[in-house]
Amino acid sequence: MTALTPAATPSRQVIKKALPKVVCDIEGVAATANTAITGASTLTPSDTPCTWRVQVCMDNTAQFGASITVGATARTSWFKPMDTTGLDLVANASYIFDLLVHAGDTVSFLTNENGNILNLRVQELIWGGN
Image (cartoon, rainbow, N blue to C red):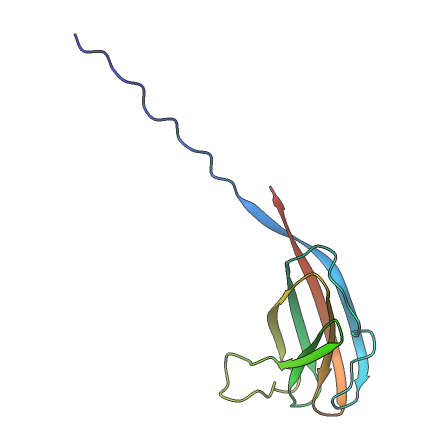
């Protein structure tokens, strides 16, 4: 008679989910070209490194970007919508972008045209257990 060997213990799969924390939530704010949007300037992360999920809708066709300041150096990056070859976001359409944020970053959001921000929501994704 041959002894049976116990089956390998199955590993537990850990499922993590993102718990969002509001960083910015504005609606109906006038935006001036190439200037930090009121209510969306000098934002800082609470837990780094992290991902910020950014949802924006503007009333005009324009570019939308983030100015990230580290120390005394600010650099502006324009978000690129996946459905176009250019950088312009279509008026009255909602877009979602992810932005990687690190310790020491200060972030401001801006547009390259005068117009109105219909809504701008930024959530810091905090990864936790289920």
